[in-house]
Image 1 (spheres, rainbow, N blue to C red):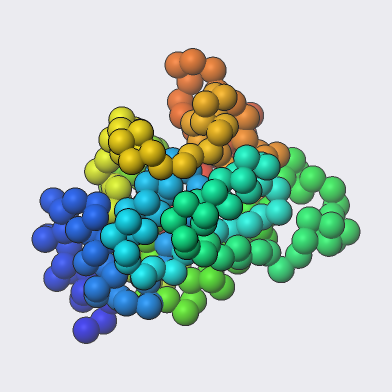
Image 2: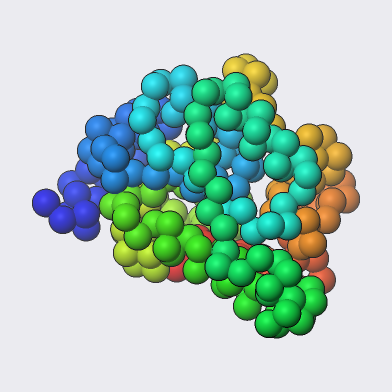
Length: 229
Ligand code: SF4
């Protein structure tokens, strides 16, 4: 059965399933051809918690752009220690130093799309190549672009199936799970950073601002392109 056919057959049953049931189905269906790419957001920590406590053998990786916050690197280690898992670091072809030599300093200030392409999209495409399906932690209410996301969908951009177990969760669902299960989360969330990406492109948000207002502040960019169609 091709991945596209599998999506059509499985999706009706999974739309009402719990996040854990979705992960269990994906793990059983795709086996070692399934991976989870986490950016260590609150949702990603929930997915790691669900995967680890259920004993699911799912490959885990993160895109280490080289300019993550120290708090994010600390959380990475904390999650590995807490759950006894390895979260692989996938790095860009160029270090920040080499990128500066080739493209000049602080590319993110001059051409953030180019920088995201070099430091996120290209490494992600290469990292996903060996897999048939990838888990994400996106939720429909996060952005207008994510409002129509489904539990299972064909990811034409990267050529595999996308599994979105938290797609129907609310912000409160995520934090209720974190507090109930004492899931480690990024310390920056308690300092006004609801959405956390690379340090140069993330700022805190003021009360009442959109949760992603601190991402690429001052530009129209709202997504790095990982989940756009
Ligand atoms: S979020 Fe900023 S620093 Fe990170 S890859 Fe994109 S432009 Fe570069």
